[in-house]
Every structure is written in C-alpha cells, then in structure tokens.
Length: 223
Length: 229
Image 1: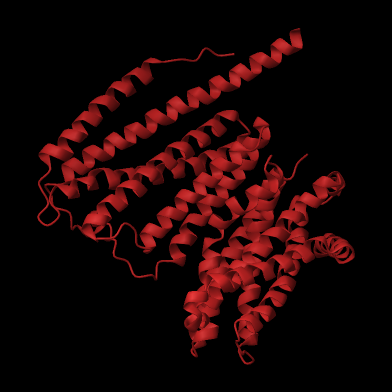
Image 2: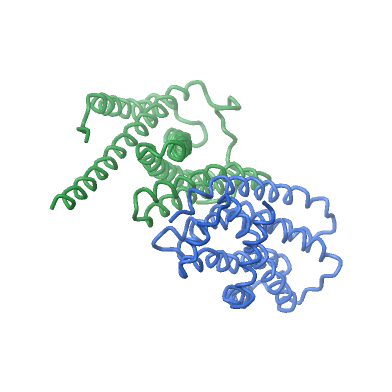
C-alpha cells in the first residue's frame, strides 16, 4: 500500500515542482499576511514576541488553505480526476497520497514564512529550532489530515475555493489553539515539558481525522 | 408515491407542544422562586440551559442520521440529518443570544472567551458550516453523501475542541445539575422547560422532514412530467 501512496504523492510533487502553481501562491500569500500583521500589530510593537506564535499560525493556516484548495481543484479542472478514480486502489490510498503532498507543500511554505517572520519581527532562535520543527510537523499533519478531506468535500460544491476556509477553520480550531500554545511555549518559556499536552492533543487530532478520512474518503470522491 | 401530510401524530404532538410551552412559561415565570442575588434575571436560566441541552441532542441526532445515511443510502436519513442540524443551530443560537444577555448583568461583560462559551461558539460554527456545505451542492444524492461525511467530522471534532480549551480559566458556572447546587424549588421549572424544548425539537424535526420529503416528491414529479412530455 505504501508504494501506491508514494506513487500518488510523487505524481503531485512532480507536477508541483514543474508548474509551481500552488507553492508560488502559498509563499507569496504568507508574505502578504506577515506584512499585514506587521501593520495590525504596530500599537503593540513592544510585546511583539508574545504575538508571534499567533501570527505565524494564521499565516501557515491561510497559505495552507490555498495549497489545500488546489490539491483537488487542479485534478477537477483538467478532468484528471476520472483517471485518478480509475486507479484500481482503495480510495483511502488516494487520500493518503494527497495528504502527504499537501503536508510537504505546507511545510515548505512554513519554512519560508518562519524565516521571513524571524527577520520582520527581529527574533533570534537557534536552540529552539528542533522544537519548532516538531511543533510545525505535528500541527501541519493535523491540519492537512482534515484539510485534505474537506478539500475533497469543497470541490463537490458550487463555491469550491470560497467554501474551504469557511468549513475548514471551525474544524481545525483544536490545531490552531494547541499549535499557538506550543509555539509560544517554545519561543517564550524555558520549560519545554509543558509541550507534552498540546503536542498530544494535536497528535490525537491528526490520528483521529486521518483514520476517519481514510475510511470515508470513498463517499466524497466520486464522479 | 406515498401520501404525506398532517397526521394524527403531528396534531397530538403539536397540541402537547403548545400545552407544554404554556406550562413551561407558567413554571419559569410564576412558580419558580426568585433568585437571591440575581433576582428575576436568573429566570433566563430556564431557557438558556434547556436550549443548550436540546441543541446538543439535535447534533447527536444529526450524527446518527449521517451514519444512517452512509450505511443505508436512504434519503429519509438525509432529511433527518438536515432537520436535526437546522433545529440544532437554531437552539444553539438561542443559547448564544440568551447567554450574553445574562452575562452582561451577571458578569458585567457580554462575552468572555471561557472554555464553555468558546466551545459553544465553535460548535455553532461547525453546524453552520454543515448547512453551508449542503447549501452549495445542487445534486441531492451528492449533497446527502458529502454532507453526511462533514456531519461525522463535525461531531467527532466537538469533544476535541472542548478538550483543547478546557485548561482556560472559566467563569461560567459548572453544570449545577451535576454538582447539586440548584435549589430543589427550581427543579420543576427546569424540567418543565426541558420537556417543552424536547417536544419542540421533535415537532420541528418532523415538520422539517415533511417539508424536505415534499420537496423531493415535487422534484420527482417534475422529472416524470419532463420524461412524459
């Protein structure tokens, strides 16, 4: 099964690396969000460090939504979805492949957004990096676990791209809360043992929704 | 095609609901004692709490109906899911409106981002999102199937939302029904209101399902007429 997941994942990665449609939009939107936040947070310039985790995750979530939108819309536009549906594999495999691709795209844009945020907000992190990577990894997998399913839900509707953030953000509230909490533990405290709880909640979220999505994916992906 | 309409059951249910509502109002405003510190303001409790419990019941019904649809592919389950979600959103809206009115007087703020308030708001958003998904899928079969999946996601998400924010400080009172902090004199009014809200839930779900199946029937008739001509 892993081989099949890998094939679908590799296909999406190759398409993206050649066209760079999603990544360009995701990265640039991340920059735009950071700049907008810079203006919005001007009055609290002195305590900016406390706001950075929230800013980061809003930027991640917005740019991630752009990427998730494309993950099925692109197939639909080119009529490639029929081909995808004709592959003699379980629909859950399609889900896992797509989710892996969405996760990688989102992680790439997160790296770029984080580096920019460090420059814009004048932060220095070195020893915190491994923990930040861990938090981003778990949070992003949770985000895309349910995001990939809801992206497939949204392409069924008349509104498509417009609808995804409306239905996705209420569902990923637990991820946003815990990711912001975990990021601010890493950036603003020294005791990392407190990381365990938010990481556990995000991991549970990811596992629960990946399992649910794997099981029900056949119902949303039909032609 | 079956004949559908106002059955005896609906009539009985409607009359029981009417009587139950009048009785609940009588109990909440005239029989229940005046609260010591909050005065008559506390009477909003008899509508706030039962609406909340009944709203949660409605979402549980929606969850069961979504599972039922995915298992059986019967449009009856879809109509039930839709009706339960709509009534649930209405009931939770009542909770979210009565809450701030009460809070402004009792806590001196309209809103506080406490666990119970935040998770109620997120729950409300989840089911508004469910209704949005339905709204934008024109084909009935696709709509039923795709929205059923979203219904499962919403219901599974709710406890995780609650768990995620439970470490926030809370000024909302813990459910007094569990801790036994509620005066015995207030119980009858609460129960009367709870029964009235449950009857309202059942009645509205039935009427909404009737409307939905009638709509299906009309579409079916139109389709047949087009085929015949």
